[in-house]
Length: 349
Figure 1 (tube, rainbow, N blue to C red):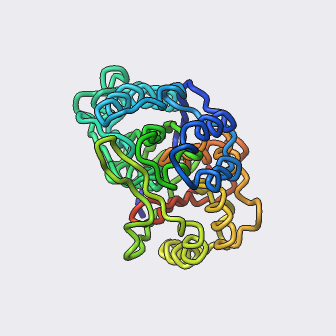
Figure 2: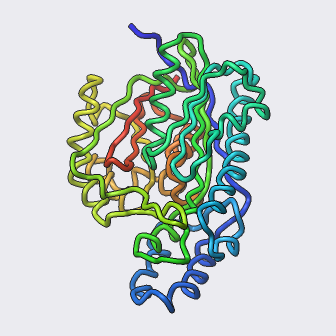
Figure 3: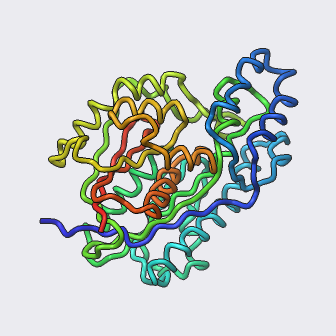
């Protein structure tokens, strides 16, 4: 039997600038309505997105400038590093560890590019050893929190006794556009926020939960459902309106298959901890998994207070569920570009 992997610490971090949804909606109307013929039809998304406020790495007026990719990348490297260090330090403090006791660092981010990657830039500030293993991961999008946790658990299990630090950092607001507008850009403006989360895992420790298994499912011919487009301004969001109905139709059979590989069923899971990609996606997951309306209340609360932060968001939900008391068996679940479902099974200590 492989040694169990304990989740020994979890921390979340948010940047300092608040974006109240009503103020964002007003600015968006002033900026976009004269240039986007269908804005009035789209404007209701600011009320229906389920977001009350979000946090961002820059004040609102910064995003109103014409920003090119170098400017956005510079902010990603600077502000992303600050969030990385803040989340990692809090996780280290909770675990009672110093940076030089970490053996591997997994960095998950899909909203900016930095080479050297963020964990290399954070080594001195965190006191990481020169021989620490670095594993930067790009392109997982909203599934990155679950897939990153699964990867970190696999690394910890592969070298018993080693301590693995996972940090998910996303600056989704860098995708806000004032130049070329699409329906997806307006939805992103109503939905996205910035944030980071960090976990520490170790094989052989119980922690507050143990990782019991992980699985992914990628549907064929779904590359256009979610992702980024690349242009001179940077990364622009690609959303298909089909995400909620797709999840409603296809998530249950995929979940059945992923859980069956671990000798589990949906009925055996006490709590699904889901990435809140949006209100309609949460409604679809509740329906598809027979969870009952309103079962994903923590997910809705995180969405309302922080928006969709991509990869760290599901870890924000896990932190909230942990504070309320995790039931015996939970499953983290997130959907991301690919189009992929990613799951991680947890047993509460």
